[in-house]
Length: 72
Image (tube, rainbow, N blue to C red):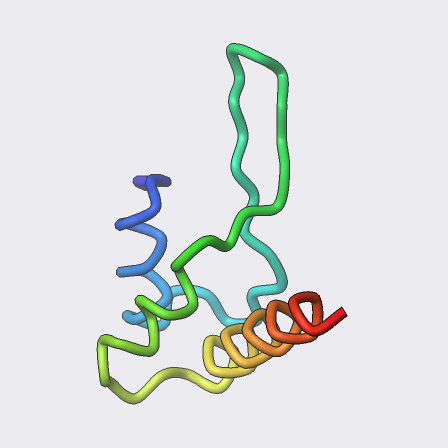
């Protein structure tokens, strides 16, 4: 399975993930891992398709957290 950003967005849109809670970015060469969302939630919404309940909840949660953190 592909794991680059574009593939992950396509998989979300296609409903491949039932109950997503996070997206992790890993750099094996540097031994790093972190939660990364970037533009993924917005790209998923821009697809203008019916999303699964799990994907919609994930996107709404991430966007709400993003907005809240910018207000603080």
